[in-house]
Length: 321
Image (cartoon, rainbow, N blue to C red; front, side, top):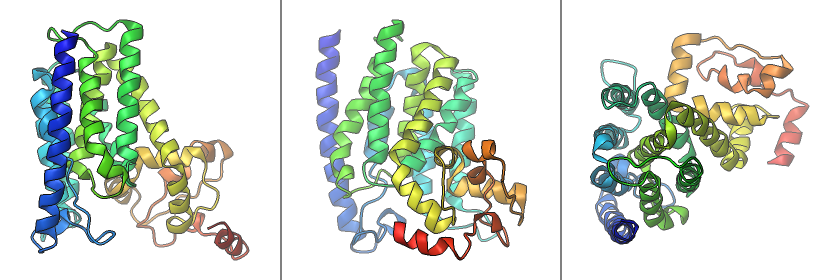
């Protein structure tokens, strides 16, 4: 059985590597001629976005039958997000991509319950958030995905996870690792982007792998670890982001974790609905350590004074940056 898995993984690796190179070339050809819109953003002269469609398609074929519906659902909704980006409906002040992502997460929860994942399906759906935030710099999402895949394999071997549908439990995380490994070289070089279709698909696939270790509590444990690991991987860029965009000069690791958990357009939209134009200032040392300044930061506030540095602090900020 393991020999057959090895041959299958070699085949999958080759298909994913060739498919990624092909989609890269195709998207560049069409993008430079103005046919792809948001799928070819003007970053470093133009970089294909949404190349993660290749891993998404492969995972939809080779994941276990009981979870392919979840992969297909989130891949479709996420690719719609990639296509429309930040474009808004003409009749409502909401981005098409945000709505599509939200619908995809809800459907993953519902279908996950139907497929027998129970309350784990909620965490599987919300794992999309940290993987999406991790995909903000070249190679970071791929790194998180591959490391978490190997950690999942180790956990399965330690607890002796049972076979699933006549395949060893390690099949699922190893499949994710192989697919991501084949895709990742051009991503690490900054030549392509996973896009929402890629990072959303890897998130749901990882959540399923966590569940196969031994149920809900393993999903919860590795969900927390994934969030913390993503915050660690992105700590340098998040520190600059907090200082330049949020005017938060002294971010804590809790702020990084909270950004991974609640950052991004969807999180800011929820803050807008809840807080309106108010900005809550956090002064408690304990709450600051746990990242509540980031949790309650409202970009839609008229005057987010709690994040504005004094004039004496601005020169030191410039020296550090």
